[in-house]
Image (tube, rainbow, N blue to C red; front, side, top):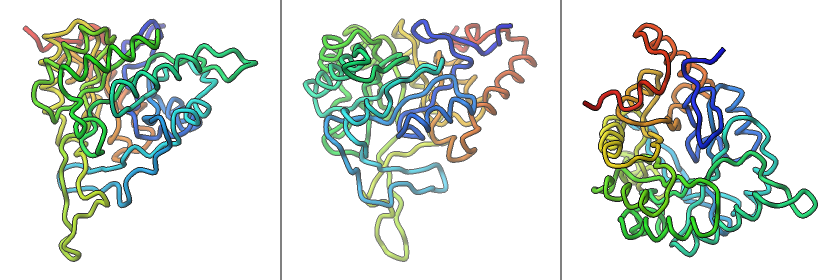
Length: 316
């Protein structure tokens, strides 16, 4: 029997449209598998860079009175070790490999390495069985040399990055945009015109800061960080709504969704999938199954038979 919240992503069936966002519980294949067992429809790995990165000095995360600030700085083992870790993915849930580079050349090199690993034979390397897509992150608000701090949130930059990636891989490409940079609609349009297969709207907002009154210093080791959680949801919903009117490719709505009704709101704004990140901290790793049940309860109560009929429902 087909569930009312089942959907598909690039031809892969998903039990629901909830996707683990990059950077949360995505450091190992085992952690991704655990999230899948807890009810998510798909997963995104931790963002991988060309070389290993330690990331920013801690503290890296702090809860505020209005959401959570984080400044991780992309800690990761580098693309080579990362691909080995995530190789052999055999679960039915789509796995998205997240990559982040300093410029279009780095993004192209990263994409080429993923493509090579994806096509590797067992005798020459571990194939990334089940990899569904690449996600190019151009939206981090708190890491020098990357994302917003590298000026990647412009139509010109996203065009160059998208072209560089599409030249190196046949995998579907998701471009992750920032709600912090004005003109996200133009950037989404540029990504689509350059060949992107989907948009992830978006990332943490900011940067913002929290100061320790006793120390008279910023709490975060980097000083500032991206704001996530429920407070940024209205901005995410508005960005999704505007982009839905401008592009024809699918949208992953990310930013502040912590309940099933939050997910439905993003669907109505135009998202086809929902990225879930900070909600894991607030509600625990079982949040995916809980949100899925909450979606079903609302849909049954309101006479909805499928996710598809909700996508873009708020548009006249």
